[in-house]
Image (tube, rainbow, N blue to C red; front, side):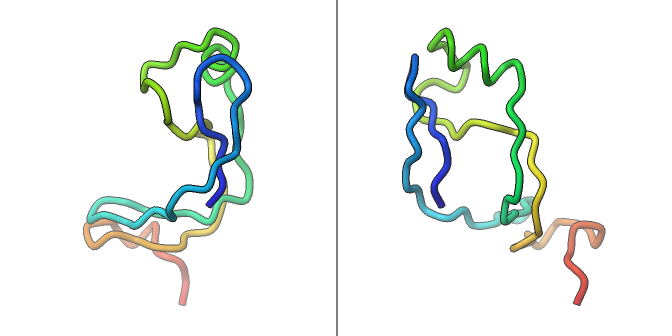
Length: 80
């Protein structure tokens, strides 16, 4: 995948990273849209982010479920 990665004050590069794998309590999405919120903008402008250097930005996602962990309930499983 190719997300925007926080690397301090501007720019925020698009980098190639390995595709995520669903752990037991995880859901992996094929992201179709991702919002940018005030905390993302503040980190981008200030160069300060609680997660340090390297986190993938954005956290308001919409997409299709690609993988579901074993402990995730049925509500997150795609229809068959």
